[in-house]
Image 1 (spheres, helix red, strand yellow):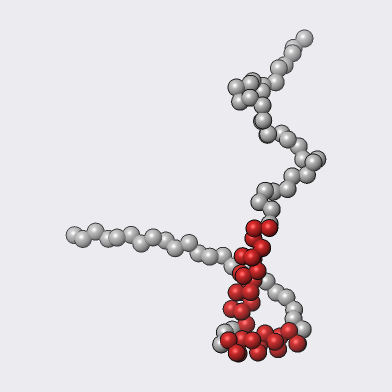
Image 2 (image 1 turned 135 degrees about the vertical axis):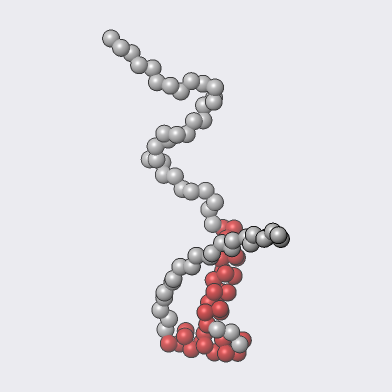
Length: 91
């Protein structure tokens, strides 16, 4: 009997909805631009967002911000061989 080849599962892309309002003039400019360039308003807006985020992606901070009041409970910057256990005294 021939063996079946398993197909790889394709990871689904999760989408989020975004809503915003435009003035009548902005909407008419977008409609004219899309008509001239033979595209849809949705594709035009998505490509503009993609281009903007690509241009300014390098200026965004990489590390998460930690406030100065944040506790340092699990940050062990001392020697890893140093014993960090608590000593208990019984009287």
